[in-house]
Image (cartoon, rainbow over all chains, first blue to last red):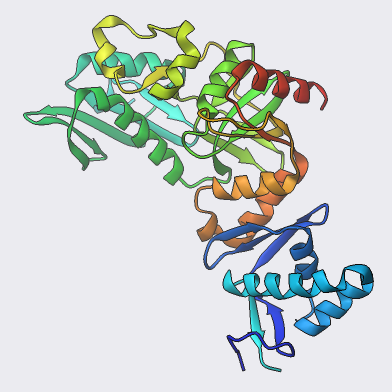
Length: 97
Length: 274
């Protein structure tokens, strides 16, 4: 079931129609339905790449925190913010597992 | 040549051909001067009619009225706009990007930005320094060969650009000066037919302070290409991938063109390094 509210265990999945291109770690995404083109920053780009496989917010936080444990607090906040932005832009969907 | 078009010049730009019929003889003469390098033999695909009416001028394309009541000083701008529109709506295999383009030392430089970003002024400044002109409005690119083809319309300059090209004033015969009261149209002194796209420049506004021109990534170039490509949404993901290929195969610069000599220096240096 698709949900609008941010639930830690809900699954985030890229919209199948949205395309992206990577330039030295920076992703540019294109939604053909809305015509939206966005350049993501480095952290959002990393989250976007992780979302190649649908993941929960918790999984995203765990994966990113494991890469740089010293920034775990910031990473958690970043994940929440960027996932919300991706949902707002209509680039990903939020599913209740 | 069919009899009905005998004596009427046909012009060809990219995949579009047209002729102009008007009772404003000065305008016809001026258009012929501005598009003389595009004259071809053959029957035009489109007919642009510009006729005087009691409350101004009427512009029709292929017998369909586009606008009535046009003031004389706005006529030439409207005509050029109609030609641009025809070019954009003519189907073709090349990608049409809203960008100026010049050739410097055999390498194509795209100046990609929204209206008012300074691309026409920068294109003219580069041509004045020896670059060869391709377009100031539409860069037509074959993304397989990376060839950018000329769309050799006259360079259009708005009043806020005139101060940068004072050396060109006055640039039209006095008897038709009224036709360039709102916009200037300049025929570049040197032009190219096509060249290989090698560099994408994203100029900032002429007015205002901005960072000097500097290297940017292909990501910035791709965003600019997407924002300035006609019909991207309709063409969808395949077009996005094609634009990404262009961005990946080109260098990219971005920055203020407030100082034209500095901007030209930076672009020419970058081209020399390719």
